[in-house]
Length: 429
Ligand code: HAM
Image 1 (cartoon, rainbow, N blue to C red):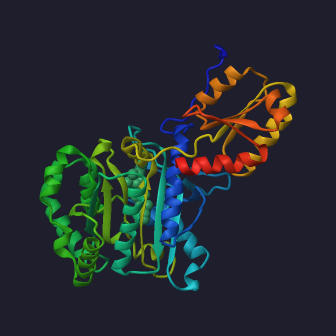
Image 2: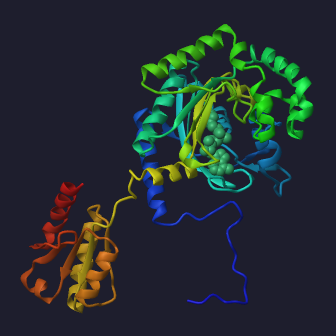
Image 3: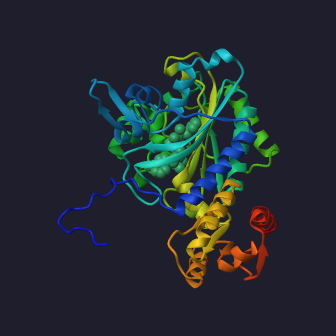
């Protein structure tokens, strides 16, 4: 086919991309594992809108963060409301929790989501403007055991999708009681060095000194390394919480490193913060991040509700999954149905319907063709079996079932083919 040279073809927007088969097959497999693992830990799915009031993110993620100041897709809609394409989903989950008064049901709420997020960052390998997250949030408990359990669930999920090489970095950012003292110490320390830092850091040294620790400018790193550590300023309760979390991580067999600078680029965190990085991914090496956000609900007008959660960057995860190569794309084609002669088409079509109804992936072509061509297609599609129906088969009432791997062929009665194939596919699995 030729494309008209007179009309400029329209391309996808910078930083967004199409996910095509067979890649989407692998994405589905990963999502299926997420549904399974999260269900095993008794999480239920939540789906929130992609668009929210801008204020939701300004209040929760924070007005001085990179996300809110530089990266949000914010627009005024026709009703003069300021709306934003969600840059993350934790704020939306907590908004929904408040809006639907889930707190009235008592107990804790365990929710997870899979979907696209939007940040106007500079696109590069592993960084997109529309990217995907798989995330989980638990609301209603401040117990450190939950922090550890969520990290255990994340580790199980990574294991299930074949990721073995990664680092778990953990830290505590304290709480509203102990953090102010640290922030004022940080501000003091920054006073004498900020003149040598980037423009963002100079501003943040006054407005939100904690954000200086997120700075990625290479020249600023040595200065940041020498700043006071938040760990040294935790109050007794935050210290106890952190010690409990790390103790439980050890008991659960999870290896971690303490990363004193890990404050994360969002303002809502309290106490535990963490990140999962993978050396195999290059510059954009953070596969997942999260932490505790005990004050977030109140920031957006809800009742005091402790929370903990994480988001995995699915685009980056998929790069690691492909490199690991353990997970295979979703179900291959079980059978290709080859028919010869017009008289065989109704039987072939009936068999395809029965097999598909029985849960097998089946392909059939409706254009008449010779057996040789049919077998060529079956091979190309990597069908495990081919069922051959011609004049001879119609006469005997038994169809040829060919194992495309071994080349062996057997005659099977049509009504027995579904069980025959299921049996063989089960043995091969
Ligand atoms: P975050 O660290 O901003 O946290 O994002 C989580 C993950 O999303 C990152 O580790 C990264 O893998 C992926 N990610 C972020 N931006 C991009 C991008 N432009 N392109 C590709 N991947 C990206 C959050 O979003 C919090 N909501 C996590 C959380 C959940 N905290 C508590 N609960």
